[in-house]
Amino acid sequence: MSWAGTWVAANQSLILDALGQHVELVAIAVAAGLAVSLPLGLLAWRFHRVRGLILGFTGLLYTIPSIALFVLIQPVTGYFSLTTAEVALSGYTLLILVRNLLTGLDGVGDEVHEAAVAMGYSPFQQLVRIYLPLALPALYAGLRVATVTVVGLVTITAFIGLGGLGKVILLGFADYFYTPVVVGLVLSILLAALGDALFAALARVTVRWRMVRG
Amino acid sequence: MHFLDGCFHYLTSMANWTGSDGIAARAVAQVELSALVVLAAALIGIGIGFYLGHVGHGGFVAVNAANAARAIPSLALLILLVIWPVVSLKGGGFDAAFLTLVALAIPPVLTNAYVAMREVDPVVIEAAKSVGMSSARRFFTIEIPLAAPLTVAGLRTAAVEVVATSTLAAYVSYNDLGNFIFAGLNTNNNVESFCGAFLVAVLSGIADLCLLGLYRLVTPKPLRRATAARSRGTFGVHGRLSRVAA
Image 1 (cartoon, each protein chain N blue to C red):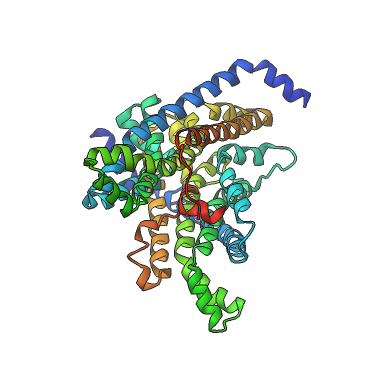
Image 2 (tube, each protein chain N blue to C red; image 1 turned 90 degrees about the vertical axis):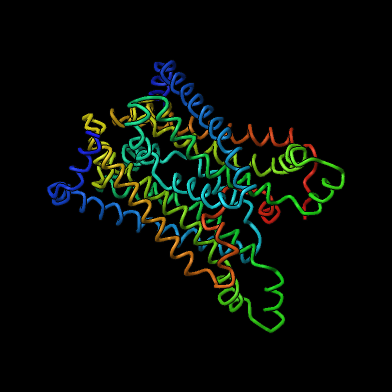
């Protein structure tokens, strides 16, 4: 244990750097994924014709293994580039976020829609003031899963030369020394839990009305 | 175009397909590992999920534990199982990869099996009770067939994740398609890594289609259209499911 403690103490800056890179990679990926998912989800919701297409495309993306996707898009997005990592990582959030947004929007009842129409809401007002707020809980659930998933996936980006906790983990394997692996594992789990808790808290704060429980 | 020509040449050259380090042998090794993992995860995950769903309690804990397990990075677990002196699994990488992948596959299988069992319409179960069906008969002839589609959807998610992650087993010296990717990355042979990635993606797509086929097979005909959108199982617990789980 003291041996492990010595290693951690001696490599503090390496660990903190990796952790910082990890957080950055995750934050950009989830933010970009959300930015793309919102219009995609709305399109799929409004136009039934493209719904299957969008769900099919995001599903296909989800099927491609992360390490393979990194390597496959490298020739276009650049070798050892941040773009490669972020395009792939945010791609993985699409299926989760689009599907959850759709679940939320589809869950708005007809009686709610009729009440909104009767009160004179325009279609845009309905979307912004009725549908999106009511879809928020499902979207937050999606964000929680997406964040936890991406935190795990980012450990793989070490293979294409980007930092993050994966670098610490691979360091341990290279030296056949398990302390760095445990450090990477524990920090990655903590980060995932933190991201999950963050969106859970956000959901609690922004979704002020009480959900009806049956 | 030069690059794609190189990849085409790599994939069509017979020498790259044969031998113990060829594409064929490595693909078979990856399918073998993945299939065994999915089988094991199905036995454990569906067993526990169905049981908890049938008896109707303890599920909230199980689903949350399964969700929490998603946070474990497979790469770290895989490497730890190989180099941690207490476990130190060698076995050419197979043992460590098998355990890591089973841990990865159980959460989606268990969650979906549990939710599938809970979502069986209570009215149907009441009807079965009122015509005098025993608990066991109800379980096998009513609940399992109705829960089968969503359960297989969970299996599908798991299978795709397993095939994807089994690529990493190559890093701890299991001889599968991941080797092309890692060897290519290590030697800056972009053609080799690209071809390896392409093959892995194809294999993952095949696994996805196989499970989609199984999904269609186990979906009772009247339900086929209604559940098409759910063929990938559920992500997270929300809305209707949270009510079920709470």
